[in-house]
Image (tube, rainbow over the protein chains, first blue to last red):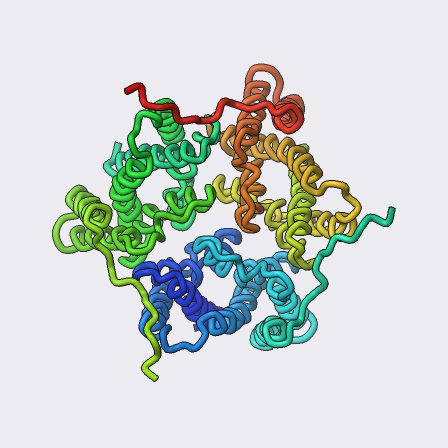
Length: 207
Length: 207
Length: 207
């Protein structure tokens, strides 16, 4: 199995865990768990594959991904009540999934020979859109857009790091590792220490 | 016309009725009726076709579908005020549309030779995503995700029944009928008798 | 550069401005501005390209579009506070973007030889879906669906005008201009003078 497929598996599994946690917070039934878990786990990568016209879409080519996502959802259904804080667990798992999905997305685009802006955008789309779909469908405020947190920015930083590493230093594994590390460091720093970019605040016109 | 195309027509027409009913509850203008009706009617099947890379998408290949959806929306615009309860009508029509769309989606995937998990997922996607788009766009709580009701589960059951029938008993029409019957029985049972799966309820940790 | 590409550039730029204004109202950080701007700017055209199976999608073929959208977002980040009313600016810019995107979408479908209903629908999809995604993701009531305003109807009128002009009078530039003019006139008339279609209002059953 290629490194990229392995990353896709990791991202699918961890995103499925976050989807199932969201389902547990919404008190859904087991099939609802599976549905939200699959949507979250496969949403970003599916969008990437449709946009890049990769046929077939990754989970149609390899239905094992679906089994992995469903397995993760079932585990959460039976264990979520053991967690002290589902929201904290959710946010930290989500940060891991993001850190894996960003290089998975950017790496695929790189392999297809896409130009740099597309490589970076595909990393961001694969990382962010699954979680966004999860939150929009359930009706939560999207984690992706929460004020005063790095999320899309972390994905951007990671995808940029991957592209820079692969172009100026070493492709393949080192680039993937750099992408994951930078994404996770930025996102985790934001969760743990409140790192953020200045947000827009309207100031009175200078008259 | 093939049986699958006939099912697509039926699902498009009935989903369009539900979309127009939602538009009437939101007091939209006639073009809003057409828009939501088309989104609901064509959303699930479009997603199926894009994911399976069927070209062209069914309503682009055959624009009659659009006329059917628009016709249904116009009928609702002029008759919705005659209904005693728009919400009940909406839910029951939606259950019929689901029961038709699930075998329509699963049948297409089966015909293309997709593996079992993809057949089942395509049935669920075709059945559930149109109604989900309708509710997310209008800002309602998605019927698909309503707590304590079978919906995604009914779609799953129906798609599974279709696949089992077609594999172990008889393909084509009997399988499509089995898929529709199981989907509708589960969904209608849930609406009429409150059938449900146990939902997730957090219990205190076992210490 | 073809006229259609030029229209796509115009629509991308102006929709990006509206996306960034929405981001400023939600007090996002700079990367949030870029994200919402790109989603709004590219959403409708991307859906058009995926549905028509145009490969690659326009902004993957020509990443300059991304630069244009990001540039517009940055300009708004630094100037939005100078505006007297961001909401009014947003609505009027949105009307311009709609008027450009509708002919851009319908023109592409026409060029590909699509039948009339598809030409009209692609105009409506390209015009309306970017703004719809912007509003759904941010959690606002979609401008597209606001009661008592022409929006989808304006897109419909413009796309119809484009098709009629191109079929019975003159293709290419005159048709594109007709599409843009009719769309904008209808939308602007609705904003300025309150033009609307009769909305659905339930009347008591005739007994």
